[in-house]
Amino acid sequence: MIGVIDYGIGNMFSLSNALKYLNIEFVTISDPASLDSVDALILPGVGAFAEGMRNLNRTGMISALRGSKKPLLGICLGMQLLFEESEEFELTKGLGLIPGRIIKITGSVKIPHMGWNQLIIHQDSIITTNISNGSFVYFVHSYKAITSEKHVIATADYESDIVSIVQNGNIYGTQFHPEKSGATGLNILKSFVGGVNC
Amino acid sequence: MLAKRIIPCLDVKDGRVVKGINFINITDAGDPVQCAEEYNNLGADEIVFLDITASHEKRDTICDIVAKTAERVFIPLTVGGGVRSVDDMRKILRSGADKVSVNTSALSNPSLISQCADTFGSQCVVLAVDVKRVAPNTYHAFINGGRIDTGIDAISWIEKAERLGAGEILLTSMDRDGTKEGFDLELTKIVCDMCKIPVIASGGCGSLSHFKDVFDIACADAALAASLFHYGELTIAEVKNYLSDFNIPIRRLN
Image (cartoon, rainbow over all chains, first blue to last red; front, side):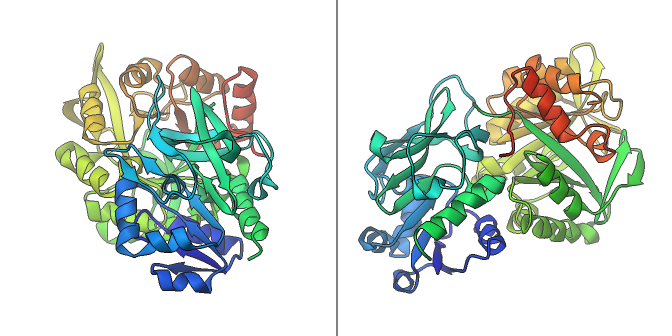
């Protein structure tokens, strides 16, 4: 059973629709007590980093997630929250489950980085088993992660490298929206759930 | 590299897909949910539903269509037409849309853009603007399907909308819409050069080379077409294969 963390930020509909379509059993959870009843977690999210952390804090989820040993997939803002800190608006501490930080995308490119970009896969991971190098996925974001190479599964090229899939043990993150990335995205969700044996 | 997007637009009236040439003659062309699913399978990068339902009472129909589509189609969905308030936008987003476009109401109430951007984030807010050339180098924003000149300078309006928090521009040339003579490259280029946010070019597409030109010459981020795709004159795959031959980055289905 998958637990989708609802902390009142961004819409849950697309992710719910995708999980339903894939016949993946899930519940939405918004309090730490419910963490025990699920095998793995998905942390979605759209919006600002500081607001995301505030909302997680309000629901008591921060320490629960830091202490949880369960496989976790962060999506978009959910991925960014996995890192140690972000410079969006004001320096804000994140969950610290993956070493690294979130910085503004720079260069002569349009911001947000919005649309379909190609994954350059650098190393194997459970969640990329059913997709090929060069697959397109859908991004919408203005900030990006900076982390050690060993955590980077895939990047995308947007003048600079955009860290697109990260992993640290059983903590995973995608900067793009798998639930909006057609068949490729659905395969990633399926691989995460299959790979962590739920 | 970021792919240039190819977007079919489904004009929806009372729950059915229609497309009028120059927005005047309207013919029935099918079920919007099935059309969206088919376009997704054929490689569309995004789907736009434009709700042209006249009566306000029937406007919830579009939310049902979006909800049904979002259960089966896992690419971005944009919905526009008659959005007047933050609540209108909330309803559509809650049905499963990813972005909502505002047009007429934003012209009379520009703060609608900032209110929606503050509430849902700029990435959800698309400014749709119907533009006609009224004199050399002078473009006005039109409403009512191109019938009424607001007298507002379209270029300054777009600039203001970006400042207010719009996340994307859906730029329709009313001079070209339905003509199949090609996108208005001059207008599109002016807007693309000015904007830091993505621009979707719309109106006038009739052949493969028109897509190439709007990306190569006018630097658009996305191209939108309706009847061309609805009536099977071109398929999305044909457009993408063609663009690929010219090294224009497009998304391939794997």
